[in-house]
Length: 130
Image (cartoon, rainbow, N blue to C red; front, side):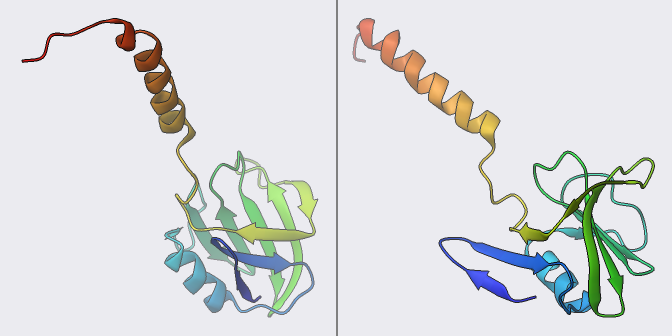
């Protein structure tokens, strides 16, 4: 897997390509994902490696992604249910971006609504200067 750069950093993984777990683990760590060792991933921002399975819970994904490796060959990429460990949907490729690189939508919304509130309501109130 080859990292590519555009306006923001990302890493693309495609089915059937040759990959090395240690390179991906290093990239995920540099992207601020937490390595939970052989434990199961339980929340966004974590990854683990167990017996040829690399699990990654990407930011804003409702469920984690599993990379199925046989040696250095990527045999499959799929979303899976973290409770049952069953495949939910197969993916042809996966694009990984640094964790917490996307804006916090709640903060963005709050900031925008605060600006709108100030513009509409506070601009009409003339406060005395102190």
